[in-house]
Amino acid sequence: MIYRLLYEILKNASKERVLISDLTKTSQNHTASGSLAGYLFQPERALYWLARSKSGALIGIETNDDVVKIAKGIQESNVFEQDKHSISKNIPFGDHSKDLWNTLSIWLQAVYTSNVDLDRTEFHMVTNKVIDQGLVKLISGATSQTEVENCVNELRHIALGTPQGVRRYVDRVCSYDDVQLGNLMKKIVLSDASNNSFGAGLKEEIKSLLFITDELPLDEIYESLLGWIHNVAMNCWRNDQPAWINRDNFALHYQKVLSKFKLRAFIETDQLLIPLSIIDQSEQTRELFVKQLSVLALNDDELTDCIEDYLRCKYERTRLSIEGNVTKEDMERFDRNLLDRWKVIFAKYNRKYRRERQFSNDAEIFASDVGFETLMESLEHREPLANQPTEQYYLTRGSYHRLANRRELELGWHPEYKALFNRGENI
Image (cartoon, rainbow, N blue to C red):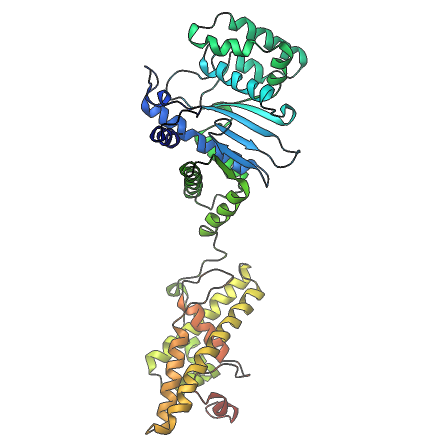
């Protein structure tokens, strides 16, 4: 990729297989933008193999090949991949092209001098163009031994007419015997524009492999994963390390990305869309939670707001239960968390009350004020439900009033609420 080339130039590297001339040399049909598009093609292909590979696999960029997959288990094949992205009319891997002959030369050398296990390795030629004829097309369709032998014969025939500029690669390939050439051809796979090798088609393939549903923002997830691959590769090169990416590290990062776009288990109803009647509100005046609020000397507006929160919460909890988006266990956990939070707040203000009540000129008003502070701090909160943040305050506030409405008196606001209501006062 272009970052790797620039990095190697700055280091004046001479041992890498990518040469400076590859970056600076352009032809009539190969512009700088074309080169950049080609190099950026590799991370896309690396992402594809990361999505497709099993646990323990390693994916390399510009290591033994453009993209390489090293599988952990014997049930999964290794992959050597040559990527050729073109924005011109030229079709990569043509019969007389350097693309084809150099690729075959590299692979043959890897198999017969570098101990690459041919039996469990695939060799992929990948391009964004459609290849509908030529030797590569012939090789990709060869399945029988006879067809493979015909491919070898065709290769040697084409070799005779190749131009001088690619002769050194041709000679290297033709130095291998027919059996060696045939064994490699059996393992060659062509991926071109007709089978989603790049762009939107490749993105859809990756979407399917990663089980990304239509409700999730595919483009944002895709770009985030590509950015992570870029960063990992750059960090490797800056530390003089080959760019090997662990599939399990990728899976962990993917889960983190996915959590940012996690589908909401439910969508709360806006408070303005929940119908409230005067009759419903007036009927609540006999409820325990209203009596608990009344001993705090709330004004009419404050009391009305609390009653409306209670009614909206009742409506919404019923709706969520009917629609099945939130389970009974979710609701019970939600209420337990509210109770736990209230206990801490109540203990703080109850301590204040016990310490300072003897200094108050009017103990009853002081107790009412402390209860009001307990109420306000408790209600200024939105509790998550079913592991999802809530947006509407009424769901939390109304649930607090539901808890305050229980005859068990497990929650209250006034510092003496149990004594008051256990005696039957204000009930």
